[in-house]
Image (cartoon, rainbow, N blue to C red):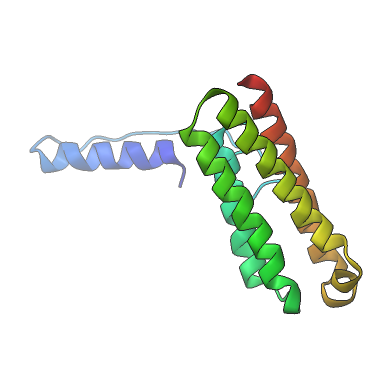
Length: 148
């Protein structure tokens, strides 16, 4: 259920509970799909989008079998998230600096997935998926940084 449909259902239910007559509502939604994001996160150069996609990627990393590399890979992603949160709370030069550091942390994440150990321990499809999603997030971080 989309947010719009949910809001309309809640509004109709509130009207009935308030003593009003039940109403009928019709909704139509447009949807588009993207291969670079998971359902629930919209790709874009905004703090909310970037944090949502980092959280989804972190969830997938924690669920994946990454062997002894899991802690290092997850740590690089956690560091990137922390830096984006700092940038969101700051302004001006501090925000730009934190976003630059976050992009670098995502590069570290991607490089860890490119290591020889990762090639032996992690399936190629998993590595490629994580790397491409991290690259997309890093690109949006760069775009957001350019708007500050």
